[in-house]
Length: 580
Image (cartoon, rainbow, N blue to C red; front, side):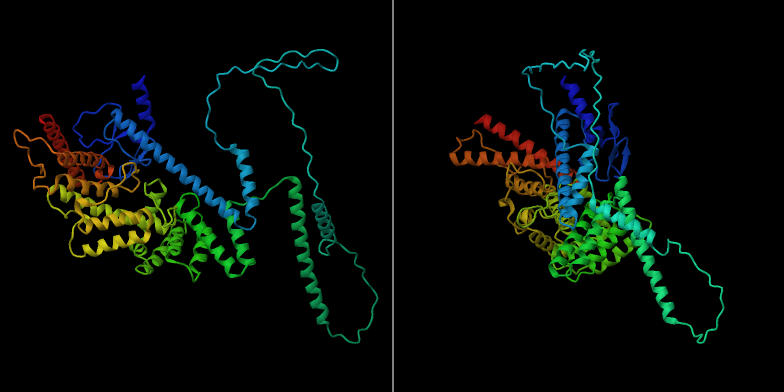
């Protein structure tokens, strides 16, 4: 039935298996697992890991297990999984394009795809419903044996053993010639052949007994040449024998990429090729940064760091990528690599040419690695470039997260001040204290440099700071909330001012003029204003439902007070319509 399906759906979502109860004195159901919210620290309950922000597998822990919450959290979890799948597909496509652009890359990629299909099968396909049309059973062909008798029936469920035809190995005439040459060279070498030594027993007199140095040098040179010839012949022979025996010497993907990159750097020295090689190294370092737990070996990361940092044309974004890649080494020598990354990161403090680059270098390499890890785990931050396409460089990702965090802190403090009667005040960046105006300008300038959707949010943020007030812009109704709560906070501030105006000190009195008794017949303009105000109240209610209001206690209390005022206004509005 429906309740059983709801219960199974609740047990399938990790955020619903772990229930966050803020009141420890409240009686709880025996099947609910409670997580203490103070102090927030990572904890493990079974297979569900709750991080310090209160999220489980990308979804915030639920407080109630009502049917509406179960369906909402399930939809949110589905969106998180879809975004994660899309990100993994994009990373796989990027790595494939990177490998295909290298020397010998297409062959390596084709071999990897063949081995993947042999091990895991083809692409995953959605299951389709069986057609209800009855299929016509094909007529069975009776196969008779050579002596004319019909073989007996086999039992159902036991498939017939089909012996595959023997595979005929392809001929390799070139390898045969190489093997023959290596074989004769190996046994023809003076180091492996034994010659008969004739001992002369007659005696004589040497007139000139001076040694011949030239003969000694020629003998030594001949010895080393024969030794090199023997080594090359042995390698060719081993290669041919291993090819015939089916023995393959496969290297790891990282070593293959590094070998191809090194070969490209050695064979091509022109400027265009050097630029393409640097781009390949940067893409390799980005794959290390966004997948920190997959490639933790020291050698590829050090090579990528050295190749990027020694390039004179390396930008601050490239340096950030190289330092983050070097920081993620997991070997015993990783401590030395991390110390080097911290030192170089401090040297780049304040060197960035753009405002968001300077903000990134101000946060520290340890915090930057943590932010990139959160982004790679499925954080809901949308990063767009100037042309609207995704730009997933670590510098732009960190800059976007910093700008979003600064705007969120400022708007959160502003919303608390507006609701509680301290307009323009609040915590964090919301207060206009000493240096607050400069920090606002830095945030707006960084958002403008990032461009795209972040630049649009920065423009709205600047208009709100310049005193646009209740006339600020709002989001579209159908727009998804992928702005990390900044748009919801902006809408809440603008709509709260537009509906309620300036709040009193108590924050409870609705600033609306009570209608006279008996009320007059409303005019057309008054009806239009009332309709617009009702729409604003509805949008304010939807904006207050964002989970960004659950970050701090002050913001959550301000949201509760705003919801109480919205409910009181709706009751008053319904009573007014009833009287009219």
